[in-house]
Length: 279
Length: 257
Image (cartoon, rainbow over all chains, first blue to last red; front, side):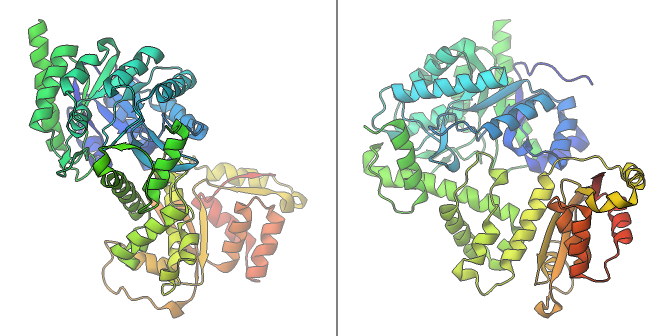
């Protein structure tokens, strides 16, 4: 069975349950798709059967939300085993997870929680990423997360922490430009300083999504169009890094697929403009 | 300065335990409780949505405010232990049985058990259907080996019985249900087989003997022991009918003589 190859520096969308039937029936032109890995951890059933069909026609990225890479609990071997089984089954072009933690002491919060940006946390999360990469036998792309608080004992700027993770482990980076914007606003740093600190050669993918402004801070809801300021920051990121696979994420109040595809087309036009300059 | 371990355990406690004061040094310091509350709201909203999707009939029977409060209490009593939110919810039925505000809905725990069984069936391993090969294997078993034979059910099979009419309750609370939605609890109990087939999830009401037989087989009991259980539940249980029915339907995946 021929399987589509490289994702390339194109704009794709996150495939969510409400759009699966339409994608299967209409096979719309989409450069690539990303799914949440855990939604396909089941041993069978309709979702997995749909993914088997979809991945034949679309380059695929697996994006995990539950590995809890930064947790001080042991890595969940069952969870990791299911990821490896899924990778074997659908041969994704990219596999990513979050630079965060989700629980401790056996209690999981199923959320993306910020690490304290300390030397201890850096050493710990690097060991864990190496462990996961060894088990999977492939590179992981690790994503910077949004946060609504910071730990006062932090000694390392977030952007230096992220860059150090890539340098020390050889992992790739999934740079979420919206999360950089949200954190720059919430914590009062310069987003362009953050962009500039990312090791360009490690950047495998870029995420874009919408946030909500609740007054006291910005919340990364994935429930709105990409904000104008984030589009500007994205254009500066592509200018700096060169074209990179870019994904539109939308997870709550999910609009019609065409709305996502229109957002992806906007990202594609930024990528194309950069290509034109390079040419 | 706390260790990473201490910080994480303290933060989990601050999120899960409503109003718990945290000793963690958080910035912005003047807004720390509110910033922790942002995480608390997101975490509980996530569980309410996830369990609402897994237990839609329980949510409909109780109404959203009651359901959300029950979910919050369940999450605090039995926090998730996995990064895969899709497998969270085991134990909600047992929790509801002891949840004082739910005592007016005595059938609620069994409806939750039914919805959890449906969820498990939907996630079970895919298994090929091969009724002809099961029949052939059965035909090859010599008669005196039958009592020791093991009958393996297809992986999505789940068995749920209740003293309440839970299938009727479940059916009248489906979004597409029309007509009469009254349920008489005097109707009595129901024993159900839940499984996934080519069309999706199938719910089937079973006789007492058939239910006892399949339940025993599902625990790995030998055929002879399962027959005893069936006959105890229903003296009229007919093994030949039960075998042919469930081989043809695909409930029985294989036999080990």
